Image 1 (cartoon, rainbow, N blue to C red):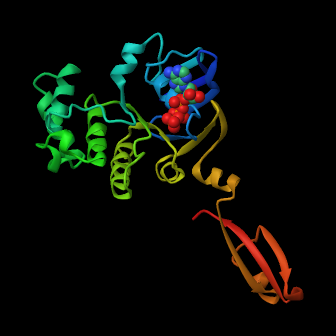
Image 2 (image 1 turned 90 degrees about the vertical axis):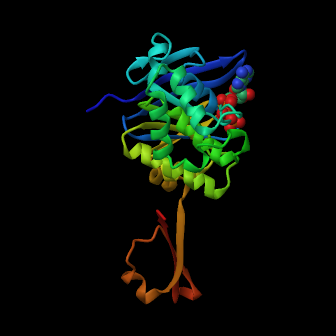
Image 3 (image 1 turned 120 degrees about the horizontal axis):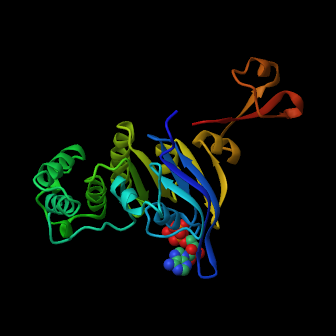
Amino acid sequence: MTAPAVVVEDLHVAYGKTWALDGVDLEAAAGTTVGVLGHNGAGKTTLIRTLTTLVTPTIGRVQVDGLDVVADATAVRRRIGVTGQYAGLDEFLTARENLELIGRLTGLRRTARPRADALIERLGLHEYATRRVGELSGGSRRRIDLAASLVGSPSVLFLDEPTTGLDPIARTGLWEVVEELTAAGTTVVLTTQYLEEADRLADHIVVLRSGRVAARGTPSDLKRIVGGKVLAATVPAVRASALPFTPDTERPVDGGARIRVSVTVDD
Ligand code: ATP
C-alpha cells in the first residue's frame, strides 16, 4: 500500500484566543481527492494554509508527501501547488507570460517557456495565451491560476474554494480540468462550500464545523447520513411485494388499499 499523500493528526490552530482548528484528523491517499466542506469560518482556509506551510500548527502533526510541513517546509513547497480564492496573477502580463514568469521564479530556465506552452495546451487556454490577464473574466483567471499552480508539476494540489463566485459554465470547465489532473494521478485537497462540487470531485469528504470534523465519508456515505435523495410513491397494497426495492418506510393510505413507500437513492 502506498503512503498517504496528506496526513493531518490532531491539528489545532489558534489565532489569539480563537481556535480556528480544534482537533482535526484527515488523510488523503495518493492519487485521490479529498473534499473539505464547511460554512464560512469553519476553518477550511486555515486547514489549507497549514497544509501549504503558511500557518504553523499550534498542536498536532501535518505531513504532505511524507514530509513534515514545519520541519521540511521548503521541501514541501517544492512538491505542492496551491490555488486560492483569488487568482494571484500579474494583470499586466498575458497568460503565457504569467506561466513563464512563474516557471523562471521556481527555477526553470530554458524550459520555462515550453512548460508554459504545455500547460496552455493541456488546460485548453489557447484563447487567453496572448491576452493580458487584466482583460479576462473571473472564470478564465481561475483556470490560468490553476495552470500556474501546476507549473512546478506538484504531486499534491490544494484548491481553496476554486469555483466560488464562478458561473455554472466556468465552474464545470474547472471541474473538468481537476478531473483530468486526478485521473493523471495528482492528489487533490479541495475546500468548497458547494455540496455539488464535493460530490462530483471528491473520493472522500470531510465536513468541518467550528474547527472540528462534523462528519466524514464518501459522498454516498454522507448522502445516506443526511438522507440523500428520497424516492416516494404510492402503490396498490396488493402490488407492494413486487417492488424492485425494499422500502425504507411504508405507510398504509386509503384505508390500507394503497401503501405510501419511500426509499433513499444515490441519484
Ligand atoms: P471562509 O469560507 O469564509 O473562507 P473558512 O472555513 O475558510 O471560511 P477560516 O478562514 O479558516 O474559515 O477561519 C476560521 C476561523 O478563524 C474564523 O473564526 C476566523 O474568523 C478565524 N481566523 C481566520 N484567520 C484569522 C486571523 N488571521 N486572525 C484571527 N482569526 C482568524
